[in-house]
Length: 208
Image 1 (cartoon, rainbow, N blue to C red):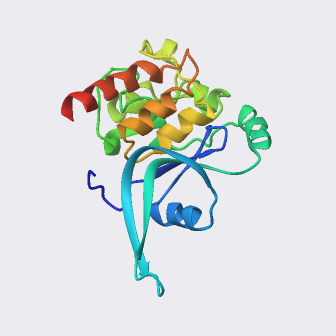
Image 2 (image 1 turned 180 degrees about the vertical axis):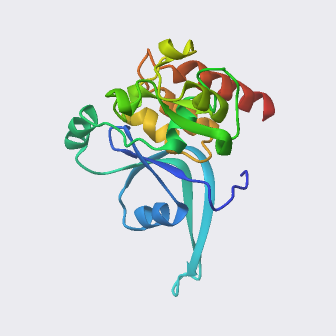
Image 3 (image 1 turned 45 degrees about the vertical axis):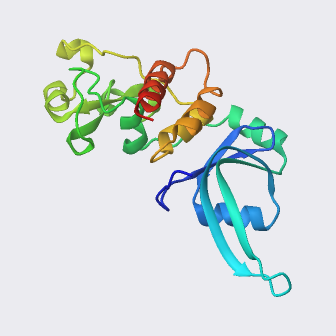
């Protein structure tokens, strides 16, 4: 078994297989212990050793997979997901745009990026996914309080609102290849993230 850091997150889904959230190994073990796991898939990432049985003398071991499905009412969850708009924050915004400035198309460190409003707030623009893009500080300063058209700038990609499954991916700190492949099957066919994740998966396979 490949050794993973204890910070590696587990992808939790509902019993129908729809992604729900990321959990740490302690929450995963708790779900196993309380028999809330319907099934598991993906790779084995943890073997958690517990106490010894007083009768048999055997030590308990909980094997935690990278993806676990839990019991629950998946119909209510599905209805909520259809109406769900993910909260907007810089970390997931920058990951949506692959840390690229959507004006100059250069990739930057997170600390050198900013959130730019395509239609500025001062001109009636809203702080929503479809009106914000990742921008480097230089491009953001140059654009100022103007629209891209007024500033003579052009976007290199169209901003979009992530679906629930896409947002789960964007929130992941280190997404394993099997988790990535699983999430990809729940993205819309038209998702701009498709090509990027397939590229990441190809690199992961070459490295392994």
